[in-house]
Image (cartoon, rainbow, N blue to C red; front, side):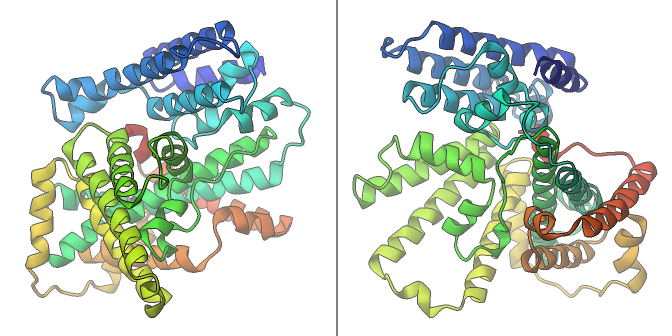
Length: 436
C-alpha cells in the first residue's frame, strides 16, 4: 500500500509538481478532522470541513474568473489536475462517515483512497465505503490481469484512435475556420459530443482496467449514454458517478421529490445548474447546466400531466430526439463564451448546399489517424458512424467480460499496435476532462 501511494504521488507529480502539495494538503486536513472526530462530535464539524473543501476548490477553480480574468486560458492556468474529482470524493467520504455508512480508515488507507492514481485525475468518483475495504485487502485480492489489460487497451484506443482523430476538425470549427451554417453547427455539436464521449469514456475504461491490475474494482462511469430514450435516461448513463454524487449529496438533501412538484422542479434545476458550474466558472457552463435542469424538470412535468404520452412515440424516435438535444447543448459547453455559442446557434438558421467529400477526403482520418482538421461534413459523418457503432455494440466492459482470452489477446494486440503507431506519428493530446 505504501509503495502504491508513493508511485501514485510520483505519477501525479509528473504533470506539475506544485499540484501534488495541494493534494497532500487536502489529505492531511481531512484526515486530521477524521482522526479527531468522534461519533457524537459537534454538529458544526461536518459543515466546516465541507465548506473548507469547497473553499479550496473555489479558490483554484473560480477565483481567476471572479477577479475579472474570464478567459479560458487564465482559468486553467492555476487549476490543479483532478481537483474537482478528489474534492467531491472527500466530501462524499466525510458525509458518509458522519452518517455511519463507512468506518474510520487508517492514515495510509485514507491517503491512497484519495491518491490512487488510476482514478485520481479524472474519476470515477468513488465512495469510501466501496474503495476503502478493497484497499485494506490490497495485495491479497486476485488481480485480473487479462481483463485489466483488455480494458486498458480498449480505453486507450477510444481516446487515441477516435477522440484525438476528431479533435483537429472540431477545434478548427470552434476556431472559426469555416463559415457558420447548418452543417457546420451540426458538426460542431456532434463532433465535440463524440470526441468528448470517446475521450472521457476511454479514460474511464483505462481507470477500471488499471484498477483490476491491482485487484481493485472501480465503478463504471458510462453505460451507452447515446442510446438513452430521454434526458433522465441519459443522466443515468452519462458520467454515472457524478450524477450519483449530485443526486445523493445535493438533490436528495435539498428535498428531492418529497416536497411536491414545484419543489422537485426547483431542486432539479438547482442541482443541474450547480453541476454545470462544477465543470468551470464560465457562463457557458452555467447555461449548460441550467438548460439540462430545465429540460429534466419539463420531462417530469410532462410525465406527471400526461402519463401515457411517451408510449405513443417509438423508442428510435425518442433516442434521436434525446441525442439531438444532448449534442446541441454541447455547443455552449465547448464554446469560448456565451457570445461564441450564440454565433454558432445562429448558424442553424442558415443552410446552404455543400459539396459531398471525395473518397480520399472521407477516408483521410482513417488512413492517417492524424489530428489534422477535416471538413465539417467529414467530421459530422465520422461522428455519426462512431455513435452508431457505439450504440449497437456492447460497452467495452461487457465485451471484455464476454470475450475469451484469445479474443481479448488478438483485439488488444491489434489495437495497441495501432495506438503506438498513431502516437509515433503525432503529438499526444491531454484528456479533455483534465481541464475540469
